[in-house]
Structures are given as C-alpha cells and as structure tokens.
Length: 170
Image (cartoon, rainbow, N blue to C red; front, side):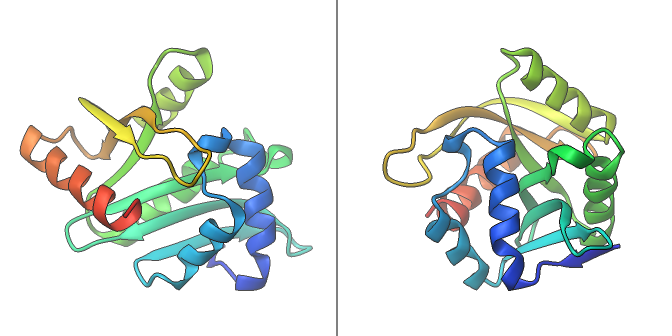
C-alpha cells in the first residue's frame, strides 16, 4: 500500500506539504525537489485508485537512526488512521531508532500532534533544539525532538542534532 514516490508526483507531494505545514517548516519548491537527488532521502506515499496521493512520509536514513522530516495526510483523507499507519510501517521497516521534530506544545494543534506521536510510541525529549532556516526568507524555529521507543540521553540527542544540522540542514 505504501509506495516510493514516483518523481513525476512530486508536485502533488509539495501541494500537500503547503496545505499541511507552516511555510517555515519546508523548503521552497526547488530546494525541496533537489532533496530527491540525495540517496539518504526518500518519500513514500499512499495512492488512491486514481493515483492521487492520500498521504506521504519523507524520511532521511542514516547509519544510526532515521529522521522523519515530513508526515502529512491530504486534508480530504485525514482522521482515517493513514498517518499512524504510515508512521508505524516506516518505523517497522527501518529497523533502527526514528526521530522527528515537533513544535513546542504552546498551541492546541501542537499539543495534539505531540499526543498523536506519543500514541504511536514516540517520546518527547526536552532538550533545546532549533530547526535552522530552510531557505532564504524563512525563519529558524524552536522545536523539540521526539524519538521512537524511548527518550534519549543528552549524548545521543547531541549526535542526532549534529547529524540533522550537517546532513539535513547543511
């Protein structure tokens, strides 16, 4: 049911990204599309019978862990369990710890997202973390890191942060 993105479908993914995330949380079109050239980066989607994308997950796979950069469900298909299904399938297939970023729990939607990940066996790590600006005109964002299976200690958190800063955000 989950398939690797067909490059010709990138525009559909980007449309869902624009509908699902604040603009500071994704790159501009060309910057986001350029990631498809990086062998560590993959996007997987669930297609409907008309080959429209219902949901997608964008994953960076490194030696020690994987990083879910984006997980989004098209608004027409939300609240049907697709996000949880995709997340859990990826965690199972990766066979390594998985981390992701979440907004600070300062709004109701941020608290709901954190709750979603907690219900799917992710744990909130309270270490300070800032996502660098993703492209010119975008802002750096204070976020938190959640990890699959358990919280991480400060040393592992620092390794995750350093990998994200050097490989994902360059």
